Image (cartoon, rainbow, N blue to C red; front, top):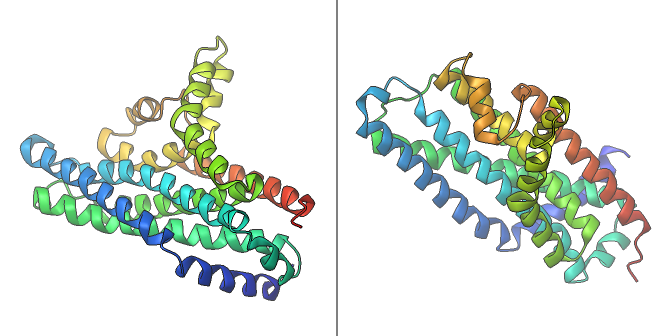
Length: 276
């Protein structure tokens, strides 16, 4: 599959996304949620002077970025499954050389939207946090940039995963409800089952579920900066609800593998689906 075979579907997908209200309709709650979370973090920092030496803004930004990934996934699902709902997918397939470029374009554009959501989260979060605490507890540039970059990648991966999942399920309502139920309830229950096992190896598997992996990746650096390298692993366990979490790099790779797997499943289903 050459670059030219993907470029045209990507341009078409960008036009589709830009012509709908979906992307900015989800951007509004993303920015509002980030503002409230980081505003609260800033108020907390200002209320407790002893906390000013800690880069608490990293923690509130990480927490906000975790929610941003959910919105990115929702956009990916709705954007991909929406073509099946409105029956425009037939025209899309007929005007594109193969179905694989269509899925790849949807995943790439949804990843871009997810990344934009993360950037919006960071910008509004920093402004709200600084406005609330006057810059007290502002993190160093290195950890801040690393947290932003990791959060952006996580959000982009969730956008791509959502597009793949929406393509595989095709029914917009079923795909959206299934995704949200899994992220909000299903993974918590599955993680609890794994955590209840007697085997330490089985309990550690909870860290490799997609939602938990994304949280571990985002929390890795902020927790280390706030709590120190010795306490950080235990704190990540508490925040993500896992046992023996890997480093942020491994967690990011795990989420990328889940995204690739979703893409493979979505591609296989799309190639065998009758759209007549």
